[in-house]
Image: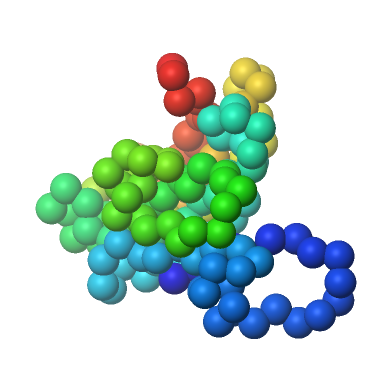
Amino acid sequence: KSYVVFGKTDGSAVNLSVIAAGTGGFVINGENADDWNGYSVSSAGDVNGDGLDDLIVGSFQADTNSKSDAGKSYVVFGKTNESAVNLSVIAAGTGGFVINGENANDFSGYSVSSAGDVNGDGLDDLIVGAFHADSNGKNNAGKSYVVFGKKEKD
């Protein structure tokens, strides 16, 4: 589970139970047990060009396409309401998209971040780390993947 806290002007403490109840932010609920969802989270910039900043949430032990521990990263499109986000809905293609790990035991999504606008198209891009991936014939050398932003209509 991850918590998104909306900005505020006073210096009072934020209680996550209040966020979970739908006030002052929203909760992002994981998709499956033992995915380690939310181990890595980051602002993603505006990946889809709608004017709202998006989020990226890593689930490095998620199984993807029958590949154990391949990992997943979920891009959650920015929003202004306080309703909870369920990553199962994102996985179904509503409110964001999923970046699936390449191979079993890659642990893709262990690290996630905005990469800025790498390709100069005006949309923010993402970088996803898979620290246990095999690379160029080297066991567990690790890989990083840059994923370009795109408008939803593209």
